[in-house]
Image 1 (cartoon, rainbow over the protein chains, first blue to last red):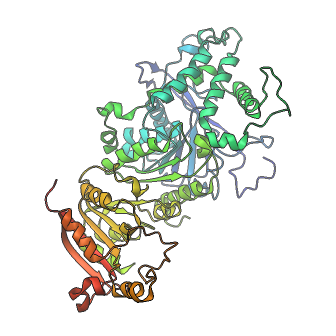
Image 2 (image 1 turned 90 degrees about the vertical axis):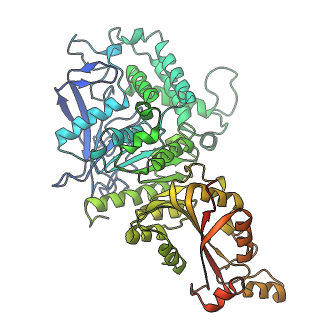
Image 3 (image 1 turned 135 degrees about the vertical axis):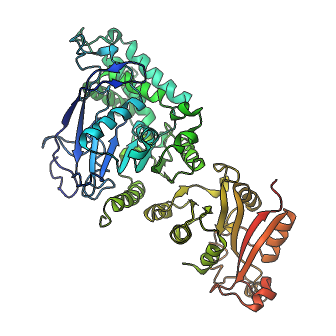
Length: 385
Length: 200
């Protein structure tokens, strides 16, 4: 974190841990008798606990959304571009909470955790958790932190889906829901991509039906391919063309199957580095949570009926070059909200970076997001911003 | 606030739901919300204005009107408003239909190309009119369909659109006896409240 001025960053942060001994009933019918959530907070909770914001992470994210864990850390938390002093989620006004979701591999209870029943890692026996389960566990976290109502629940991609689910499941606990680069449910194409990723992992000989911990193995090849595939869907054709084009690593073709093109070595690098920080069983779980997300399903497949329960104000943002969750998908959310006569604004940001744009400091995006959050801050404290 | 918006505000029943097409900075919606308990949404295509609306706490939906209002359900609003935008859209007739599909009533304002100054500039000056309410030169105007009060009312008649209310004003948004008697010659800006003669 060399040379990051405190005016621009939340600075050094330490993850916190809470253990929950009350059982959590899951959508799959199973029960987690106890669980741990690891989380981080930025900013100060005000006296009335009215300035809390929940950040929900996406598929490969975790609780480390902003700042640095130590002085040596090169890159800050995954959403540092949007969280911090003077940023859209301004930590001078808000108390920001971000937890690693259940099933994760960054400290919250998940497949790598020890199953208290067996004394062994859960592995493939960890129950498949859903967005609704996450929301339920996040509500328990809110209870413990003394937060009755979130000033806003915010997320991008799978995180945006959690924000939407929050507004439906706990209408009185969410004043604003911000869903960025999200979708009301996955398309067949989205599920297809997830299935290829899962097959890559599951068919890796080192997977051992998910029990690779016991074999001291890691399904590296499968997880790597899953990540490479996923990564392609996070970028856009135009973005990749600009970044890599057909640029060669060396000035010549090698006539072999090593990586000739820059884009190949980039994807391989993404795959390799992912394997070191992510668990294959968690990846499987997260993709299933995506596939299963469908808030309309509980309301006769009527999304607007689902949103009729919500009391929050909504901000929906999409990016023009995002083809994973294209603007059309966000418009479905907006249409359902308008049909349900909810308060909603929708911005479609011109961006070439594809789905990943939601993580990037794109000026118009930040301006729009900032404008919305300033309103939220003023509701909490009329003198803010 | 622009005086034409002031006139429109008076036409709108307090407590109703409106859709403001081409809402710009959201001034009308903010005014209606603050003074007339009116809710609803703006539709806007300009990214910069979207952020301004959001900053003002006005619900705004980023959208190109040229693709129609298919995201909005039939009769879901009391009023669909379009101020000084109809002359700048390509599918004029279709959008009028869309407005009256989505709204119980439509409110339209437009610059009157039949005003004597326009006629004078074209007839005697021999050039495309440039006036207060139509300030652009022919080569950089956003307007694609210029029309007169006479033209508009003929279209309404042909489409069985009922004119519920009309106001004709000058560029200071003042009305006068002259404009009431010779609207198409003396009016610079026309404001209409429209309805369907029967629900189709």
